[in-house]
Image (cartoon, rainbow over all chains, first blue to last red; front, top):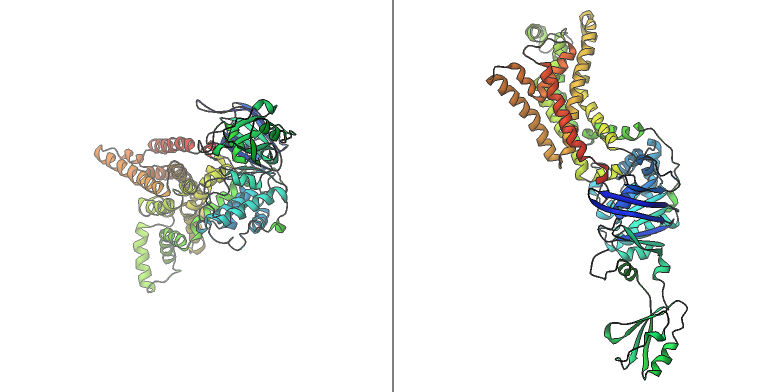
Length: 308
Length: 295
């Protein structure tokens, strides 16, 4: 377990941002999803010790919950969403400076600055002033800065923001390596669901300060064999839901039926049922849920109703 | 793609707070010297001190500008106005409106006033707040770095001039005897420098952009001094000139140094500096908040 949140309540003025949230964020790469205002930033702030909760606590790694903000932040690597850099400094100086601000000795910070800049692929550009970096290089230098003090937990806030396709692929590969090769616990907050599907092991979906879905990505989306799109001739034929105990039947686009069966059910009884009703099954396609389906189902909305 | 083979683990250790703000203070001190333009600006700021140094060396006969007669003549004239054995000789370049305030405005506008506003402009504050440094540590680091740079002119230059006087005078006795007064004088200029820097750093924290901070600081210093001067003349109350931020600092520095001052009010100066520091500091405290980071 990388982060344990228990009965967390955060209030800004009269606005309750997080209301009694309890959640265990597992190790590995975890996607943190939610619409704007769902409470993602509040959880990050509370984990970093930047806001004082009204009730509850956040425990990072094995640190005691009441630890001071600076000591907690020294174990966490945070990559902000906004473009952020230290003015007039080179990439090397910026990363080393942020390492020293975390408490590293100058010699260690310099050594680690070289290493993490090499890791993210900025070894050639490390002595250039960050103000002159491209968007992709700035994202990478932010990631290097988040890594310089070798934190156990990393919060990456929209790390692929503003990147071209190649830069995005490189950034996602880096994020993948953080969890897989370097053993970091990565909390990955983004609005791009495809990025989460590409790199995350688990997902947490928040809505209005509450957890509405949580689990391993493979479990949440790996429902192949349970959802089916069925095409019947004639298309006007109605399927009787009572023939499929524990399942549901609904109309999909184009006259097809959407059949959801409980795990382990055999879809073959569909053929007999349709034949008995005087029809013929023309098509049966097992459907796989996407993360987008999971997300909108969890927040009770639909695609286009609000961005994650 | 990445080069993961170069990554090595780093051990965490609990460190005292100063280990976190010290690098930031050093970086702030060095800011001006990162560019050739900055070095040139600093050299310009040193000019009044260099002029005093030349005068000293001419007076002591180390520099012979145009032969002995000229040196003797220049020396005679100079001794009437500039007396190296007097404390005022060393404090004037730092505390007088000309050149002291002009040089200070040039330096502080380019470095101190921009210090925090520039960080805000590049979202660097979010990087700082999510590290191990607190807002108070950050403000202290910025203040100490800027103060040290400013003090090289207001404390360092007078001290160097006095050392030169002790070294090159034919009879060093009067200059060595001046040491206690010099110490008090430097303490005075250091106090004024620290106060001016604090007000400027707080103002930088309040302003949204570096340009706005530079204009606000220059206006505050020149404006309050102008207002103090006008009130002092209109109301025939010379002590009102201490309403000016620069003038108030100079009065405070001379008071600590034990230099007699005509028509100056130490109480007014302290109130002016106190109101400016506490008032702008309170505004800065509202603008520098941890909770603004993230999101």
